[in-house]
Length: 625
Image 1 (cartoon, rainbow, N blue to C red):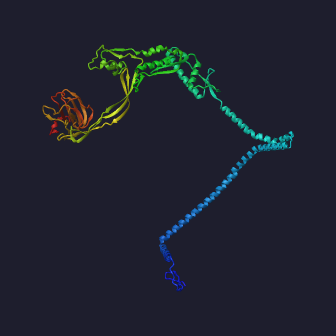
Image 2 (image 1 turned 90 degrees about the vertical axis):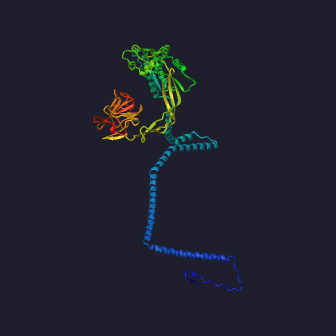
Image 3 (image 1 turned 30 degrees about the vertical axis):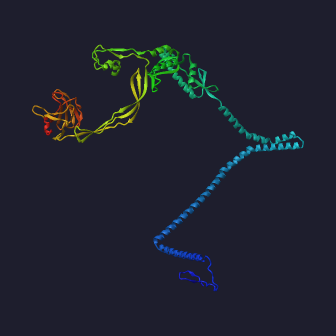
């Protein structure tokens, strides 16, 4: 019997092998079966142990409140998720049933009646036709049967059939009438639209031509009005006395017609209207010079050839970058003009080949100046000099009675040559100067050397009679950028050149001086600061210039009011002072240059200093100089 082992398993009682005295030989593969058996038993025991460990773990885990609460939470989440999905599914199912129900109602109440109506209409329309078809089939069958019996159908048979189907034929005709009416309507519309509708333009009741649309008619009328205006302008040119008596107006009208005749454009229609309107006008060409009408001729082509031949000698076929134009704006306008305003072609050529104005001479009067003479004759000073080149000479002297050209005779037609040229030129570099206290006054140091750039210039150069009169730059392309020259200029004053006196702060006026030849004394009013000719003189302090000019003794001199009662005077400057009266200057600003003007012997700057109008010696301020 089986008995329970200590591990809780069931142990099988081993059977004793049969007592066979005959020795048994081991079966091949028995050891593998034993190994598999033992492996299976071991795995079974391990699974039993794992199950026990799992139960033990969950017993301990569930004894912890947090784990129990978490498990309850996950359970509730799963429950509500399942519940929400269930409700959603039920709602979608109800919605689908409701939608199907509503669609069925719509089909029953809306679609089905329409389908029935369409069916009834087709049945009513085609039922007579079907009955007629059936009758025709019966007639054919009767004729066939009669033929087989060698008989003929009596006329009474047909009359009987017609009487029988009369109502059917009437219904069929009634059904076909709307289709026939629609077909007639379609043919009528197509025929009407295929007609060629045009506008017949009339003048004084006579048709002068046809146009395709009202827009073409309006354009032709606008063109016509412009031509009439030019005709009036030409009439005023030729016969100004009778101009008002020859005012001319045309009022064309149009009517809609069906016609296969060729239509005209706006220009052709304007020509047709003018030809039918009056014998007082005719086709011609107007010559406009600078926007003003100068002549009208019927030989427009000859005039165009004359103008082209006039420019031909100035043209250079080997220079494609040169164009030849008239100095004046010459325009030829073809149109219709009054016959009385047309000029003889030879007179027009003589006008173009002639002179525009005669030479005018002015005699110089007492008190005249070149500027006054130019203004009196509506000239600029440069124009007066161009008419009289001798006036630009340095040795020229204008005397009373001299004759000057103030208006020059010139050709009516002048030709200009406009040449497009490209060249390269340098771009001057800029200079940037920075003041620095690291260097003494007067010391200049170049940090970066300046270099000129290079640019390519394309311009139109205009020549009149071979003389260059203008240059119009069309494009500039920089090939090499210029390099800015950077210079540092020293501003540091040596020891003794800066002093504070009272409330004033003064600096030495000539930092690059050589020595002081004299100080203020009983026989001398200031300090003479010797320096080379042209050495800069600077302001001792900021202030306002109160005097700037010439004095018989000081020569070129400047007085600056520094405020707080202080003033300084700088005399014997080489040139006119660099500052003017009323100008504000800063401390160290250049106000002039060392010279020897006025009562002076040798190049120096005479410096005088004042306080509340009382002169004091500069040596008191700059004792070490």
